[in-house]
Length: 224
Ligand SMILES: [Zn+2]
Image 1 (cartoon, rainbow, N blue to C red):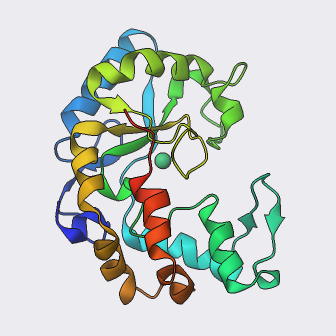
Image 2: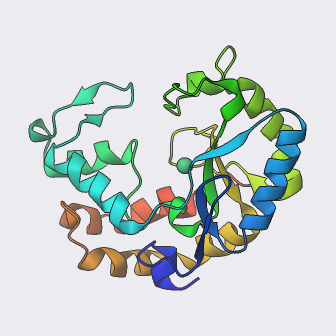
């Protein structure tokens, strides 16, 4: 992948899939559809609640939180007031739940947040919380199925709460054969380049600790 693809600035590596509706890296479509077919055979309607997300979208999420337009949450899920936090603290608080633009694995099209559409009614609002993926949550059986079967199709969980700097995300799966080369190619320098002129609020507080953020959120994952 090129620097622009690695940071989600362009989408030349992405194709739109009609069924199920999602956007994936060109080399991830077939493996994902194979995983989905196997899940269907066992009664799970495997759906990406989120797939490819571009830099502009992640930037909008970041800037809305930094400016206080949308709430920032602390580790226990309590809303914080952006205006009450010093800029450097704001950056740390946002990173608790949101990826730094350019540093999200969703930019690669290799990573998906997975749910089982058969487990909930049409009106159910997916929240992607640990409770939904732990018994008696609706997606606990899917989580169990994926634990056993996802590795056969090349998918693994990069955020298990072991080594990664990200909270455990039992819904987040990654296609290792494409994602791992991307992880190695997305250096701190590539990230710095993407953030330089992007209009990221608080950019100076990000750049001054970029090496640490890169080590924690890009390089440091839980291995396949
Ligand atoms: Zn995710």
